[in-house]
Length: 399
Image 1 (cartoon, rainbow, N blue to C red):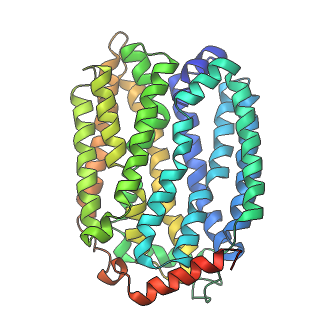
Image 2: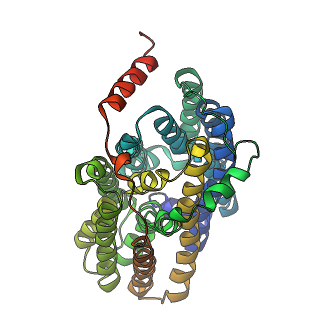
């Protein structure tokens, strides 16, 4: 959305508020579908769940986006794409949680996100160049075709882990969610799960485009280059965060320090919103690098979720994460529109970055009350290593 902002404004007459609504629709749809995803993962497995939703809803949304004749179609298309993307990361986390020792969850998920973030890289300069060379509609058609092909590959290549023994929440579809919500150990983690990701993805996925365009007069290629470096920083952050919990023996304090760094970078942007594109790029990269701790926080919370509720537990947490991002997209759209003064766009974006900084700071303060992951979750015994090796062998068709 950030890279395509100038084209969508020129071709469809979309306003900043409508683009914010479209971006928010992606996150809102993604969040609501987590409840469907959680039940489906526990009942039908990750292979069929991810393949069906990504191919039909994600691919269909991309085709609708390509055929859009007005902003409302962009909003509908983004909602469909959000629903189609909803199971992908959770399917991967489900496989990791069910197939590997708990101490590996943060690292495996972090690296999974890092490899998956190649899509964020493709959505920056490469997307801008492709849209300029072939038109944004043709690019969206290709994306839709790739989504359908990916769904077919999921059906052919992915293997579901063994089912867990039924638990008290397994019989009723939504009872498991209530069991997870009643767990008081998760309550201080929920706000940070929701808000740590909001600034990074909000800037990368939406606000970098209008901000750089209105404040610095940047074109699509300049916006693409800036978001490319931000996306690369997010990938680097995911790799770096991966092993830190086992290295330092804590998940809580690694997350606390990383998010405090994000708050400081956002505060700098709020105080100095027009210091130059280079300074803005550095701040954006810091927000992305330090904010790439989604897997770490999810692994922290996952340590308190029963095995038989893995699917519903991780998707409920993801609901809070993506739901908060969607709400922040809507909220920041209102803030930017309300504060925007003709001839002084800096004031609107100062308010935007302040909104992100304050929300994240409050979440960190609440998170300080959380219990750290149990020590036994952060260590791997010799027996667990042997079990993991056997699991890897069982996944290899040559064994």
